[in-house]
Length: 324
Image 1 (tube, rainbow, N blue to C red):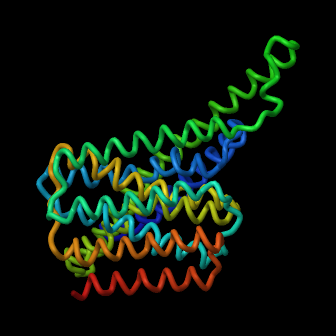
Image 2 (tube, rainbow, N blue to C red):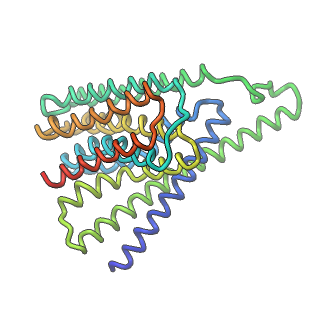
Image 3 (cartoon, one colour):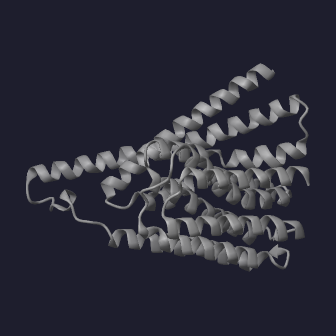
């Protein structure tokens, strides 16, 4: 039985690679055809797709009454997205080449993080606060789409379809390609979700067989497992020099976790927060968010040394959580 789960674990890792490859490739080509910045695709399609495990895990946990799992998953995933994924990605290859048009999204991330923490100050996020958070993702997405359409640059796709017969063929060809790349991205999201489930389920079984406690498994593997799609996508993005998709994915995923995961859940099941989460885990999340904000706003690059520091701080946080 242990051997089977080891094989399933390895298969899950392969599916994560395959899903990330399809998602990044499809998303980057969609951005090219639609004439929008890859970072916009990263902030929307890629971020929402890779964050779907967080939503499913948190919603099911809240529905089953395990609200602490939902809370830890949302806050923990935001910390992991920056500390683990940004840190490890920069360590593999320096992150450079993203544009100034990310500034407004960085302000959104910083502002929403503080609002999310503020809502939790009275130890609970209420129905009304949950609705307000969910409204935030709708407003953010609408503004992002509007701005991306406004910033589109004219190219050959803007040739009127009635000008020549060949232009019509070109337009139809582009629509077919667009559909294919969209299917690639959607298939990649599906494979990422399936591979993530397979990997985490197998890892939990293997850890249990080896005598590792359920507490340690929950604090590490479950939180890490829901971040696997972001991690796989980030590694593929950094290898393919799609740094805008990488950064957009992390910013979008963290916004999605607070607005589109915590928001709908709190609107249905008010989310309680312990004093420890409010005064330890939330400040850690805010700290990593501020660090990312300052680096991207001022330096506009993440060299290996900064990646090592960020990853080291994340490891220190995990050790602190496990041994507390």
